[in-house]
Image 1 (cartoon, rainbow, N blue to C red):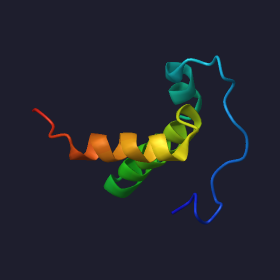
Image 2: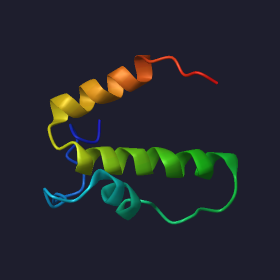
Image 3: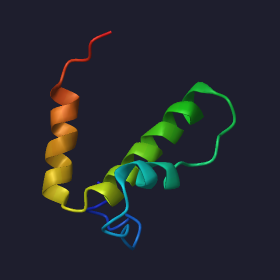
Amino acid sequence: MAELGKKLPQGTAPPDMPTAEIIQRCRPPKPEIDANSFVDRFARWLALWTFYAMTDHEIRDQAIDMALDTPRKR
């Protein structure tokens, strides 16, 4: 939705930047401790680093769909 509304950040990560570094650089500040802000923080973090790490929107959407369709083992 953010992509369609042109609300994604401008710019790109350097092509040689490792994904682990992209993930760390996109980490938002720690919020107040409550259930909503805790979940919101991680949702925003996931959205940002996937945007910067996977610049092709079709590949990014496929990867997220695959991750959501894969059952988690606990």
